[in-house]
Image (tube, rainbow, N blue to C red):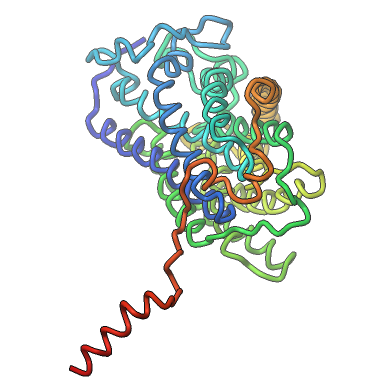
Length: 443
């Protein structure tokens, strides 16, 4: 492969983008944390935060090598030992495009972390924390790292031979519609089915306890997503600019689309709907950010916002408890964006591919469908097996008494909000605060 000189501007942009993507995991923690009940907010935050630790270490140890090492199995897996512990990446000759390979590895580490953390929203309020930590590690090793190889590892990029979806099927996925969102959404469905519904699901109100946190998380996700998509250009140029503007446009359109659905269906446009619409738009445009025009981005945004707004009601109809709508937003939104490439890809875009509506026929559409289907089926089946094995080995679910009274205090010995002395006027407090104040006033 041809070695190019390192471009400091491109390198700086990807380093900044990596930090933005890493910020998305705490942002996701806030987004999810606000949507659960107050008694489990800390547990929800901890599931995302500990994922940063688990996957961060695994990525450096073997994950990057499994995803981007030389292919050892017909496009299925990279050599786990080639770059184990990022061996060899400190060399000045280790370059991807115009950036150091070590910088690329750091950027992709943040992708791996949030891909795993996304799944946690489906099992809120009821999964053992210890089981989640083990699941996160096993799922990253058996599902995400191989899928990242299939989708993101192009021939002659990091290694000579890469994954089969990128190079043989040639399905397009600019920043993770299949490898991250469809992958995590399918896994969320499988894990939720094995775990079973929350106590009172369908009969007891389970409203978000803090919509301020939800909106904060959504805003930070939107901010970080510019690194997610525009950073995937791996350089500071036209491609990054197109991805940036498409990310803005699609997300804005999706938010409006979700709010219109809410207004027409329910009579109210809600803050939760606005936040959810933002995430749906971000998910939808992720695979297509480099291949559609801003007009196409608006169409994808509207489709994602409307489709996801309706999809979240499926859990009530079908009886599975996807607590925070990972399936309805990430799986459905990822499918919308991935398949839309086959329809809306504009040959004038940086990807230079024509979709059906631009005279390209169905060639790219079937590639997109096949790539999405492979990841979806693999993720669902392997996750279901992982969940079943872990359930048998250590149990996935917390006891009913813990679920009823609150997982935060039982598991973490903490509460998200210590309100024990707020708003109370006890005799002792009055004696301490009020009486001396009156005596001072008399003197």
